[in-house]
Image 1 (tube, rainbow, N blue to C red):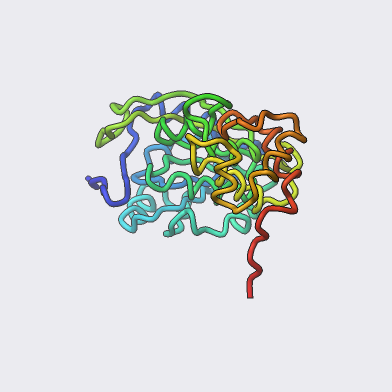
Image 2: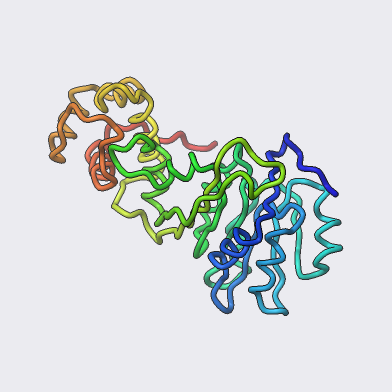
Length: 273
């Protein structure tokens, strides 16, 4: 029996009903493959393989070196394991080999969920199905002017359709975590939901906007990006938004419009040597 490593944020999912629901959400279309992040001892892997043609293998990304021999013994050549941090994988190259609409699924370690999520999202699989801490799921799916709304909400929703599929109690795991979990689905968009002038500058603007949550957007952007307050106020007025607004109240369309309005005033990304 392999014990979960606290240092890797491991909590092994054992609830068969939950495993089945995740596998159903992750089943790829015919002709496309599947990648599992963090298969661990293979509890979800078994359900995923049941939904793949018998001549297809499943690609697995696993950081814990103890797991590869166990997965090989349990599933043979049907599972191809890459020992690596999922946030550092060359996702475009991996997914390019898996047909036109590959799916990525996994029970993400809570401490590393967002770096992995962003790395996979950039490669634009057809669908992502991830178990995350419920607090993270709330942030990913948050609407404007709600407590969970933040920079992650804006950045992710600008690039993907995000839904909370279902919540999962701590009793579904061994060992049981101290927090609730949730399964989210993300379907990356071919282009940002609304036109933005530059992805890096847009990201910097959103980060700046939420850097001082109790301050107005004018003060937060001015403080973080050194854009004059009058410039930010003029941009907000131009897009029809109250200059006293705070970051969490802006809609995605308003964020995009503000980025376009401020494009010439935002810091340019540093050029690589």
